[in-house]
Image (tube, rainbow, N blue to C red; front, side):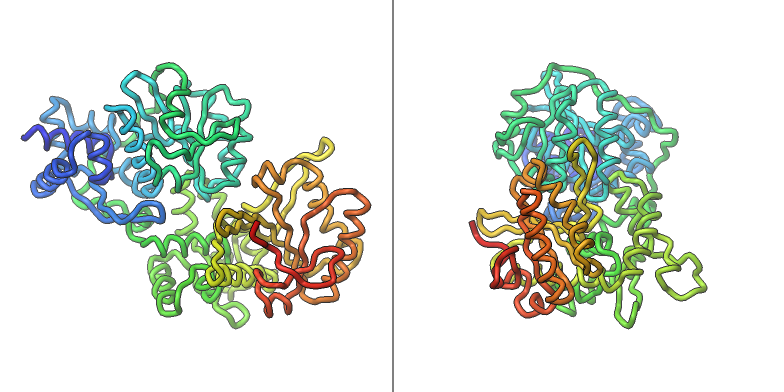
Length: 546
C-alpha cells in the first residue's frame, strides 16, 4: 500500500467522519494529495463517505474507515483488529455515537484544524463518556481539552459536567464552545473559581474563525483573544485525560448508515433548514405550522415540504388542537437532540413528550405524558399568543433590517440570581436578542392573561424589580434587557403601567419596561410604535438604534 494511502487510513482511524478540508489541515498534506488518497481508498472499499451540512458547517462529505479498511490497517500496523476497535473510535458502537453527535464533532474538527495552523503536528482524541468532548495534544506536550454545551443541555447538567472536570488530570487549558451569549456568560460565572485555565467562545464563531480571529474570552477579564494568544497563556505539558475502554467493540457493518439506524443518522439525513425547524419544534411545543414558517421565513410550499419530511422521519407530531394544526417534537426527536448535546433523554421525555398517556383516548392536555408539554397545551391560548408574537417579530425583523440573533423559550429564558441573601428568579415567556448594525437589544417577554388586579400586577413585577436591583442584568447580557409586557386588552395594560410606575417609585429601582396590548401589536407589530413606557402618554418604539 502506498504510504499516502496508509497514512490517510491511519488518520481516518483516529478521526472518523472527518472531511477532506479538515484532513488536509490535520495531516499537513496538500488538498490534492488528500483528495487523491481518499479517492483511492474509497475505490478499493477501504473507506466510504456520505454528505453532511449544518447551520455552522457548509455542505461537505465526511469519510470513515470501513471494516475491510480496519483489517488492512491492522495488518499494516502489525496489530489485531480488536486492538484497533478498542483503542480508536472506529467500532460500530463508537461510530453510532459519533454519528448522533456529528454536528458537534464537525465543529471540534474545524477547531482542531485552526489549532493545527499554530502547532503542528498535533494529535486529536475524541471522548464518549468523559466530561470533555475531545482533547488535542500539541507538539510540546501540552494538552488542550475541548468541552461543548449545546442548546439541549440545561444549566444544572452542564454545571455538573464542569464540576467533573476538576477530577480529571489538569490539561494546559480548556476550550469551551457555547451555543449563545447568555450561556457563555453563565459558563464564565461557573468557571470563576475553577482551578484550571479556560477560554470560551460561541460555537458558531469557533467553527468559522481562523487562528488569528479574536473570538475567545478567558473565564475572567473582558479582552477578546485569538487562538494564538490563548495558547500563549496556558499551563505546562501534562498527560491525556483518560477514559474507560469500551465494554463492547464490534466491527462496523458494510453500510454504516444502515447499521446506525434512522435515529442516530439525523445529522446526516436532515438538511440545515430541517434541523432549524426541528429545533424550533422542540423549543416551542404546539407551534402552528404558520408560526413556524413565520419564524423561519419559509413560503407555504417549502414549509409543507420541511414539515412533511420531519413527519415522515417520525420527528414531528402534527395534530389538530381546537381546530388548528399544532406541531410537537416526538419522543424520537427529543431523544436524538438530547443525545446530540449529551443531555438526559429520560428528563427530556418526562418534561416535553407529546405522547398520549392513553393511546386510545383523544388528545387533550390531561392525556399528554410530558409534564411541561401538558401545561403548555392546557394553556393553549396563552401558548399560541407567545408563538404569534415570536413569529410576528421574526417577520417584521426581516422586513425592517433587524436581525433576530436569539429567541429562547421559557426553559432557557429563566434567570436565577441572589437578592438580599436569597435565591430568586425571573420566569419570562421568552427571551430574545435583536441586532441592527452595532446595536444589540436583549429583551424579556411576558404575555399576561391573569394579572388583572393591582395586587397581582405588583406581584408579577416584583421579580423584575429584584432582578434589576442587582448587577445581574448587565452580567447576564452585557446590556440592560428591556422587559416587554403584553396584555389582551388596553385597559389592563393601562392599569399595569400605573402600578409599575408606583412600584418603581416606591422601591427606587428602574425597570426598563415597555407595555402593549394585543390590538396595538396587531396594528403596529412588535417593532412598531406599539409600546408605552410608564408615565408616557403616546405609543413609541421599544427598540431604537443606539
